[in-house]
Length: 206
Image (cartoon, rainbow, N blue to C red; front, side, top):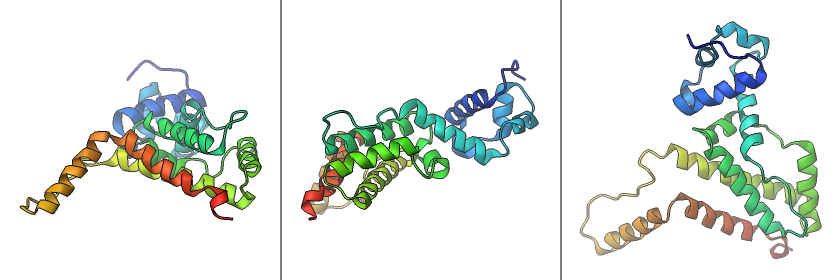
């Protein structure tokens, strides 16, 4: 057994992230976390009641460590903030193995209150209704999580393939698909995000 490490909530969460990166979400177990800490599994229950609580704490820690662009800057326009915030969330999920699945499964169901107030107030000052502001954040966060989830779970490295065919149209489409793949997931994400943000413009709906 490894040398025993300090065992408290912080240490358990840190060890859980290490196990997550090595084994993936499906094989993240409290037994493996305890082994990483050099303790028996019951020692974890002094700090967490069950695995769900551990996963929730790990998800919160991932956001705290890597989702660092959550608040608008002075004189920033709303499009720039939504874009920056989304890229920050994506970086946090990509920082750990299965990060998008982790946040979808165990992430907080609501943002931190002070952040939420600042974010909604910011969009309201830029012409959004309160409802429109919340729906805009929901749309951007769901797109970001979904796109990152697809990237992290792609079975074939995001390659696009079609059945062999002599059709010139199919060959042309395959060539275009290859160009898209070559641009990479960062470009693909940014393109979709830009289109989504443009569509949220409150001046276009009123």
